[in-house]
Length: 207
Image 1 (cartoon, rainbow, N blue to C red):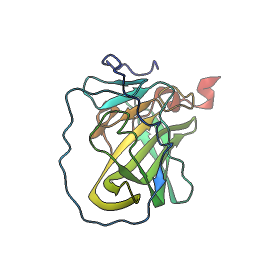
Image 2: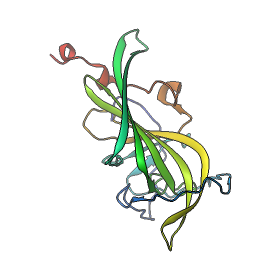
Image 3: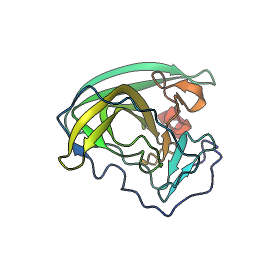
């Protein structure tokens, strides 16, 4: 990755976590009440092998890329808008919002970044693309508590939050996970995503 410069801590390993999103289960039963636990992160994290963490502990890069949730059935809403870049150019971005039914329940990516958040249910996946290709997936989730014996949700935490996967190089892999309340370059998550350099190029630029 060479389009963004991020300072990373040394790789910490020794604990092998479940592979990203390969062990997802779909759970239908939900109860909209439950403990509103405060998430407390430890100062020391043991990350999954191949994961590096930025100094502010809000951006994570995974060798080989993060796994994007497989969308089997979803209601889709598409829209297009122009986003102005820092250099003054405008790039047309198409956003495809996919509402999942049923939700996908998983402990990733939080297990791989040693977060105490635990399991979440993926409610919505938004795909961002330009004429150059898909550059970002934004995932909307809320925290859930699951009975491991029956594999059913016992309660949910109502607050919905987002995180994003970015493909910074245009190679089809999404190596960067942004957990910040703001996206790279300070863009708030509910609004415009960060657009990597490769995704701003037109066919004329490539010639």
